[in-house]
Image (cartoon, rainbow, N blue to C red; front, side, top):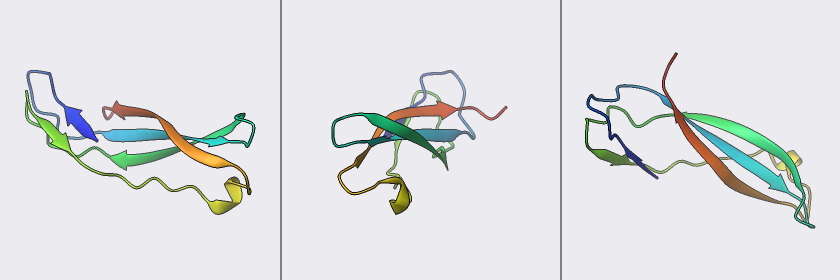
Length: 79
């Protein structure tokens, strides 16, 4: 996944939030599980960083015939 800093100053910290959806056999979205990981900081102004994340869901949340899809990703600044 690529994170691009289009701002004028370096990004020094933050988090990445993944929304992994549990999808039933008929396509019904049963649940969304959020996972939070650290942003690959620092990212200098005008540059990009690429990293890979592993997103896991407990097996009991995905019964036989269902699947998982990570559909939502957002980066957040610390508050």
